Structures are given as C-alpha cells and as structure tokens.
Image (tube, rainbow, N blue to C red; front, side):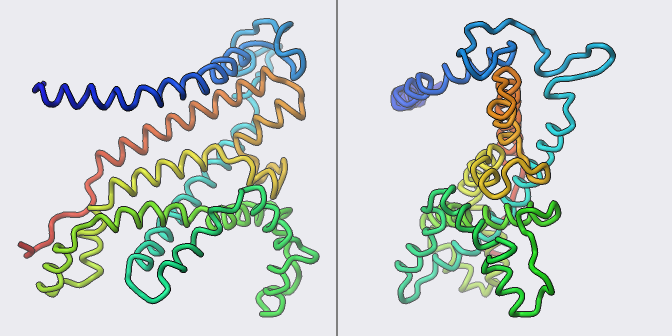
Length: 309
C-alpha cells in the first residue's frame, strides 16, 4: 500500500475510533447481556441473579417428543413473515415515492423551500404520536378515513382497519409509508444536489429523452446514496415495534419480531425466551444488512448513454 494510502487509512481510523468506542460502550454490554440471558431461564424480575443455564432450550429443544422454544413456535415464524412482508413492501414503496418526491423537490419553482419543509413534517413527528393520530383516523366508528370513503361511495360499511386481519397490515404499511417517505426523499435529494449539471446539459443538447436520462444517468449516479437509504430504512423496518404495537397491539396478523420479543419478555414474564427472540432479531437484521450491501455492490445499474460523448 502506498504511503499516502496508509496515511489516509490511519486518519480514517483516528476519526472513527471515538465514535466506535462510544458505540461499544453503549451497545456492547446490553447486547452481550441479552445474548447471555437467552441461554438461561431468567424471569423478568430479579435481574437474572437466580437464573440457571439451560443451553439452547429457549431457542429449540425437544422434550417428550414435543419441540418447544422460539424456533419451534409457529407464532415466531408468523412474526418473521409479517416482518419481512412489512419491510419489503414498505421500503419498496418508500424508495419509489421518495425518488419521485426528490425529483420534484429538486426542480426550481416558487415556494420550493416551504414545500421542502412541509414534506419533512410527517418524518419529524414522533412515531408513537403519528401512530396514535392514525389510529384515531382509522377507527371504524368515528375515524375520518371511513367517513371520507363512505361519502365518496367507495365503501358501503365502515371498515375495521386495525382489527381486520386482512386490512391491518395494509393500514400499518400505509402509515409507515406516509411517515418515512420524507426520509428517503431527503437522502435522495441530497444526492441529486451533488450531481454535475454539465451531464444533463449534454444530454439535452443531444436530444435524449428525460426518462432515458433518468435511468441511464441519474439513477446510476445516485445509486450509492440510494443503497445507503435503503439499508437504513430496511434495518429500521425489520426492527419496527412502536408503530405496529400502537396500531394493532399483539394482533397475530401484524405481530413483528420485536413485538413477539416484547410479548415474551413483558406479557409472559420470561427474560430468557424474550432475550432469545431479541437475539434472533439482531441476527436477522445483520443478515439482511449484509445481503442488501452485497446485492448493491454486485448489481450494475444502468449503462453509459448510447451516443453520448
């Protein structure tokens, strides 16, 4: 490695080291404690002082011919499926809508600064607050959503958005898309602001269609920022708890992995099983992050403009 490259690596580690130390000090002990409790029969009270080591029993074990543990629980696998559906659908919609919103906000028009500020309002509202507001709006008796749909003649009877197993996931995804699309738009907009304008001027002179310019020029150039945004949102969606719990509580139709872990820990008073479920959540999120990053590096988005200089 050349001396200049080694110097840059040392400088990078020097800048990262303080943050890494603080992160380890804050997160390492709780994570290690959670993993350790997952191998015990600890209850919610007592701090695990009287807990006994049970090995992998909280994860999977067979006694008397009957399997038990988190991995043997059908509700856990349903929670995994709900989480993956929620994350994939919501992040996909937020990515598409975020790019569209960013493209609109990137153009110059009167009042653009005010529109940019207004778009960020849903993201700035705390998740619990926005979830509670939407819970009132989606109420089947006095919610404004049903009132509007009834007035428009789109439905004949009020819908139980947060109670119906078929509609509850749609409601949760809708609220999440409404709240976090501005986050995606903000990151994409920052990438768009950094793009060189001479490329677009050359494409305009050559008479290349704007749609083609977007897929062949804009999208490849913003791909790094888009991957970062997708990774952040995917990790956040995979660990979602507050939005789902406020809207639908412990409903099996929308129960996510984090809600399942909370139920085992708080409702069932089992710190061992809850910690095992929380450890599995961390493993799933880590696997998803590695998969997304590898897919982003392997995929080649777009090719050079044909006929462009």
